[in-house]
Image (cartoon, rainbow, N blue to C red; front, side, top):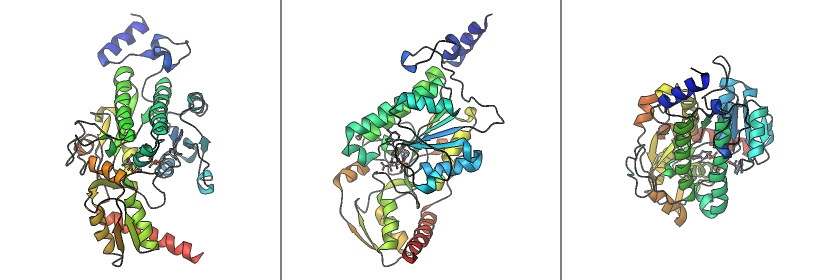
Length: 367
Ligand SMILES: NC(=O)c1ccc[n+]([C@@H]2O[C@H](COP(=O)([O-])OP(=O)(O)OC[C@H]3O[C@@H](n4cnc5c(N)ncnc54)[C@H](O)[C@@H]3O)[C@@H](O)[C@H]2O)c1
Ligand SMILES: C[C@@H](O)[C@H](N)C(=O)O
């Protein structure tokens, strides 16, 4: 039996199409569909470290993820990229490169020249910013996604794309929200994330792309600012509490949303990326650690800062979004498939955030 026939037979059994073998030597364009893609999961040997590219890496999450991955895989194996100019400490901390995900050729060149094997796609416009600029959100979150999927498929990359609690909508069960249920989000952000989940899973089943996706809750971080989402209040409150002792909250006091400390989020990302393929019964997982309302967060912060004053000035756009999102996330599949376990609950989160914000603020005041 010829090699090509053997692989075709295997593909029929596995349920994906081995495009790599069908047309070797023909130059590949994912836009021409059947051509020279090597859709096996990883292109490095077992003993090698992956070569990682992070898109949109200068936002709330990318720098922290680069730090974690560099510790694991080596400084020069992890490249941060964005369309913005990095601050000096980021530029000096490891490789940084300009990459606009809307420029397909540029993206492909970076992947080829740097022998990238894992692509972590963080570029996006978040929920509130997306509603303020729908056409840009559509470009970045949907057209950009298509570029990333094609480059990943073409070069046999392991592709991680985060989704979000925002991929659910008012018709989804909200307490708890399981992995598989109706998803009819009402934001361009949510719609683009459902699209990303479905396209990634389609490429996985159709072409064998090693697509992995976690639906993150609202992420809370001390040393990076959120990029314009509905859950941003839960970061801002710590800075304002420490600096001024006052906070104006733009969500109603009883708005319950799933949230997570950044260290748990980044560790989950590394863990799912490293999980053996056979442990993944799905390609898109909810992850969860805690859910709270602004009122509950304020109460917990007041255990440390009893004089904190909070007023509520509701932003109708953010409130409407929050009211359509999950209140509690069911992440049982992540826990049973690849052993996901969170470390931070609400008291630990508050303690850690205040420790960081307090020492940072004292440094600023002293200088
Ligand atoms: N932070 C959260 O609470 C949260 C929660 C759920 C999911 N997520 C997802 O995680 C990912 C990272 O989130 P984040 O909070 O760091 O986002 P962020 O908004 O802070 O950062 C996004 C980055 O994308 C970059 N970007 C915009 N247009 C680009 C383009 N054309 N090409 C390349 N880069 C571009 C921006 O410059 C920015 O640095 C996003 O996909 C987001 O949807 C975040
Ligand atoms: C939840 C998440 O996707 C983001 N923090 C937002 O609020 O838009």
